[in-house]
Length: 494
Image: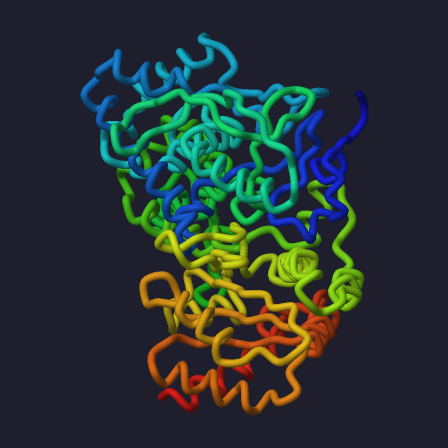
């Protein structure tokens, strides 16, 4: 086999990247996107929080081992960080083979770098992504590889859910060691996973990948750390060897810092930057705060299409596929799949980390579940004002109107702990006002906020999307219909 072969093609999914929640990778190579631990840590939702917990426990364990200078323990934590070729993320020449932790020598180099970094023992480094700033040899490839290995078991869980829903066959196989946060050790086991020509396949939700890590040493130094030194030199005025008087006169006098000379004097290596950051701890505090906000924004549909080399999604085609399905029990599965594809494309950047047919408490099943990953717009606003970390969606392909039993079904899946906003998607509502009144009553009784959407509403959302997809303020203007419905519910429940 040769050339690009995407997951969607090799398994005949009939869907393109926009309609898929996972990155539609080239199974014969790699896609130039990376798992970003900062993005995971700043997202809401059960799945992302489980991933963030695993990363936090792993790195805390590693920090403790480094600070204790326990070489045996450090090696036991680092050596299992094999290259996660099964995700097909990153940049390789030809077939996917990774670029970072592929040999014992590279693993030993990482061990030496961690042990030799003052920042690892001084308290400057708190999270895994901090290592990109201060530890030699850790760049976007290694950072992504470490995060991937640590959350491998969560990615496998996600992969099985997606594969089951899309009809991708699974085989029992080994996909690398996985981190056990309970025992704080690496474990080995076989899992049921898709198989591609080069081995096991692990799918990655597109909501947690970025074109580059959120943290960047050069950006931190130039934008957050160096200004402290510039300010100190400007206070010295012309007595500083790095300051030049560029205009004279009481009103127009101005001083300029020679940044190049200052950089040469200070040093811009990771070791030097770590030393300077200890002098001005406020720089790191400001950087973390700024990056927490930036990391929340997932890749847009356009950026994802460009980075994966796939066409942007055609939401109108996805909508027409829904419309082509005959209402009734026979078309229930097809309708569920079509709605999932449509909403995945529509909500890209707002909802992600999709799980399908999730069971709660061993009894209640939810058709579609998303984490709220929005950095702005309606869903971010919802998350700031109501529990909305997790958004469940029920699909009903009925001839007749949905009624109280269907409303109760989705309402009972909402809770203050998981989320209080959900959707009920159906084919038609002949009396929308009656359904709105029922939803208001459920909200008033404390059963959360259920927004019911029929085919006509999905068309309105499509038109809103088309009108705002290229607009600068699209995040605020999109989903106006949903905001109106939600306002109706809140107005009666306040």
